[in-house]
Image 1 (cartoon, rainbow, N blue to C red):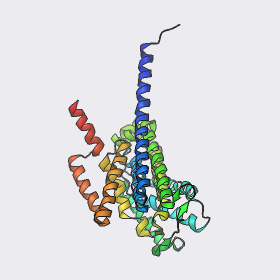
Image 2 (cartoon, one colour):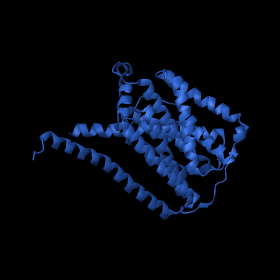
Image 3 (tube, rainbow, N blue to C red):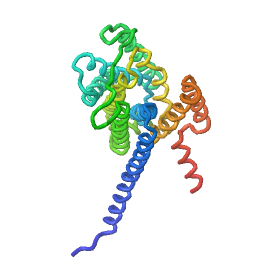
Image 4 (cartoon, one colour):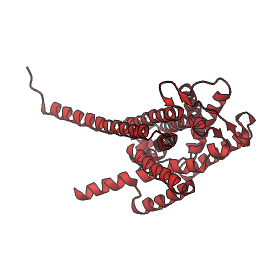
Length: 332
């Protein structure tokens, strides 16, 4: 009988640490979710569920944006366009076949993912500012198309009637919150899996030096296309429940500046180098905006974003995660 080699023990210890690194965040997330929903059920008001829905929506959007903008370094200004594709896919389904929301969300994800794939194929050969300008142009083009499309309401908008309640979930606002919670968990798990995989390492190599990465054999275009499609699909899925959340959709709402700005600002404030950064930024900034909406005015939301962006770009350019890592390095 052979004794275990020292290297085998090291491998076993490394695997144990990896399991702990995987399970601890998930356990913490499960505890936080349980506490939040216990609190929401205790409050028992529609606004509490809708406020939580808004924060969770931004968790999905910021996490999705970070897959391309954070991991690969390609700043995408078309987040509102991908979100709006999900919104209007839901409107089309509502006005035609009337599928349940759970069935509509995959369709919205597919539509936005295909848009990301097509647009990415046309724009991802551009780099830096040129790519960002091209994605901004996409939002303008999509907005123009929707404004002139009478079937989805055009510039006048369209009303979407939601049920008061749904079986097994109670009030429909609670159901929307649970749906967005599940989507946010899926998005975070996908982002973490991407970060820890060869896919994420390839995107990180492109962010550091794309030419050197290509010379080393990294399939740059394929990775960027996959990241754009995945990012767009998650944003589209986040947009699908939105018509039932607001009950009235027009281009100004679907292509909202608040959506576009927050989706970029939240990962930058939380930190773009890891999957947890966008979550921290979305929870922090989203919660502050909801508190400001209740106590003062929703007009302060963009002001809060602007002030925090200036502070973090000046004092902590790598976001909250980078700031914490820097403090740890100094202490060690």
